[in-house]
Amino acid sequence: MAAKEGISIDLFMNLLGGLGLFLLGMHLMTNGLKVSAGNALRRILAASTSTRLRGVLSGMFITSLVQSSSAVTVASIGFVNAGLLSLSEAVAITYGSNLGTTTTGWLVSTIGFHVDIKAFALPAIGIGMFFKLFSKQTRLAAIGEAMAGFGVFFLGIDLLKDGFSGLNGHVDMAAMAGSSLLHLAFFVGVGVLMTVLAQSSSAAIAITLTATGSGVLPLEAAAAMVIGANIGTTSTALIAAIGATPNAKRMASAHILFNGVTGIVALLLLPMLLPMIHLLQEGLHLGSDPAVFLALFHTVFNLLGIALIWAFTDRMVDWLKERFRAAEEDEARPKHLDRTLVSTPVLALEALRHELNNMAGLTARMCKGVLSSEVRTPSQLELEMHSIESLADAVGEYTGEMRRGELPQAVADVLPQAIGISRYYRDNAELAMDINRREGVFVPEEARQSLSEFRQEAVVTIDAALASAALENESLPQWDRKVLEQRYQELKSRILYTGTLGKVPVRQAIELVELAKDIERIAKQMAKAAEGLCLMRAAARNEPAPVAPDDDAADAAGKEPAAGSGGDGLAGNELAGGDGDTLPEDGVGEERR
Image (cartoon, rainbow, N blue to C red; front, side, top):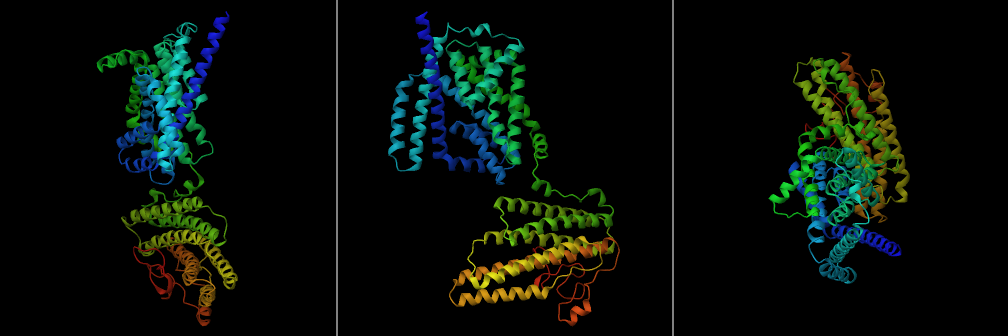
């Protein structure tokens, strides 16, 4: 009895130590490979996904190298968020990544059971750690870490193999196995649990292969555990997606759908798949080793899963895009551009005006945020910029559809203004991005108060423009061009004065002047866009073109004439640009200085 207890403790220690060494080796190998080949792998991901097939091959190749499907999935999510990959391309990489995880099984089955492990594992650990500790080059040190991890990985496999060999005869797993769906589902659950606990499908598959190769686990039960490990690997993506970006949630969902469908189909077809794998193993002259059989099975059912879901990928991607939407993404979708209204131009023009009003609110929020020096992260501004650009594109497409039909003269005359207004908003979004990038520039004491007042004046102008566009009246926006221009000239003079005194470098003074000019352009373009919206409203309702309030008094006071009178306002089919320039057909807003 004592002998049995001693054997049981030894077996337990061998299994526990083997598992620990295996996981440590995987960790070292994955980290080393990611660091040593990281930039190259990122280039492959970004450049080798032009077709879905190339995406699959890229995902398989990279996962085979770094031995971590989770790392590849996370990198894919980062590329999708950065706009370097589409969701469809990233999903294809996930397919290939699943296929790439099968290389672990092939390593274990071909090397772990047929080669004297210590003969190459121990030298690999020694050489690898020498490079890791003494190399001054980061890449060479990382390669050394990967080599050491490779050796530790196979030492762990060797200990697991010895542990399971000793366990044979003490544990009768065959008594628990069976061919019924319930028995197979139990072992699928075991595979899922092992993967979740180890946070590595490779670890679960390695344990399964060594247990089967040592005769502890029946082949049918082992195949079910491999299916479970394949399903369990989605737990990493699921955990990572909690509280993450919409793209991360979509990728995690695609991973779960693919692995889940593949696993269910493989389980249902298991009675037919196993004889087919036996025939394939014999046909490829791979011998009769059960570990090789399981590696081949893992590869075949992942290929089967890709073949099954390939034709449905586009539908799945479209379905996922409608899920897990962020508020910013919803803002990027048109709310009023109903295609059924195109046949009724007056209603379509009104819908177009409402969408431009929506754009006005988004643009004003973005511009006021940077002008008020609110804390805005680059990612927030990028999302707002994307929303405005998407709406501008939608306005352009909708306007093009309207032009292809028969239009009343009043609508035809005012329709080009919709494009001009959307260009003003797009240009203002770009200006807001530029202003935010300049927030760290030094402002001399003599110009700080003027710059603050100028920002406030611009915000007041934006608020007035928004109010005028939203109100149902017959007047153009009330905004004082002269005050805005005067504030700009005062600020410009103060900045240039400090530059001449040498208080700021000339280049920095020029940058401050450009900042002030951008602020002025934002305010002027928001007001001019509001004028265009007022003219569109009048055309949609067949009303007379609105005029500026107290226009005669304005002229008497020396102010510029209002829209329609040949000055800097909106007239006819054009949006006027700044300083008397008309809006170019393919330009945006006022000409940048």
